[in-house]
Image 1 (cartoon, one colour):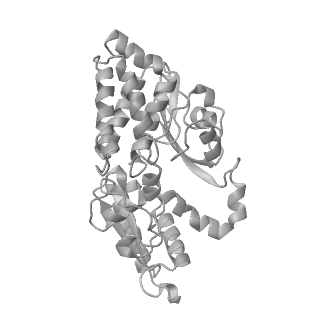
Image 2 (cartoon, one colour):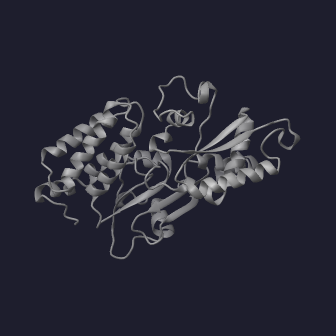
Image 3 (cartoon, one colour):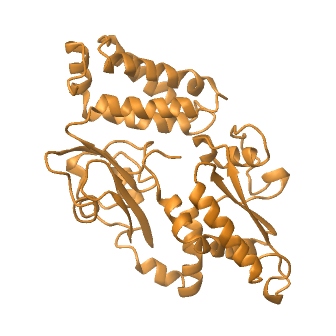
Length: 339
């Protein structure tokens, strides 16, 4: 449910057998005999296609007892979830799979030791698992040659916003940001200019036009002050209010909090209200100090039970860094100048 991210849904809708094959190979490698595809309940098309693909695999003897006479058995299930963003945290996902409230668990024990119903459990991302069949087929050395930077392989990069060709493309790791936005996404629409972008989904820090020539790999984006995250960019154009955009993201994260810890449960709604006051013309100069306070305490890893609240603070702290004048103008004029 990461805002702006849709790569895993496309993989499940367009090539469900690739995911299933990756899971079979991974399960065989670690000696697992049961596996689950945990998927948000709103992904109706993906759920149906995964279930159809599983039926085909069982009929072909690729799942179930004694797969292809190998003596190895594996059961696989599609588990539609009630959702919530917090299920992106692996222990919250495990709790939800057990039918409990999706609160993250304290670690240790780690899921690899005691996970689903106390059994050793490995949780992995759809995109990662989809790489497994190709690495097994062609080898690790082949996979390493696909990247053009420090990181190996390819990545599904996506772009959404006021571009001519929003979408998702499999490209080498390390592909320059400018190439992704201008060549694959077709550049900005007529009448719009790039103001900034979130490089890896809604919980990453803004970057600006000065970062367009950076490579999309983890270390490079990290050194620039953000995270590559999911690799799916959300574009902020010059006719969209950055305060309103951040408010929309904070509203999402506040709603998705599991409510387990105070900084997230109470702090995110507080941030949302301050931003809403600024956006709707009720902002006061001291509100910027309040936001800085919230970023310091809510955004610090270790002050919250999991990384949801610190991730939520990333677009806010970077918006204040790059678009501070927009916040001040909202407050001084008593209205949003973009409306």
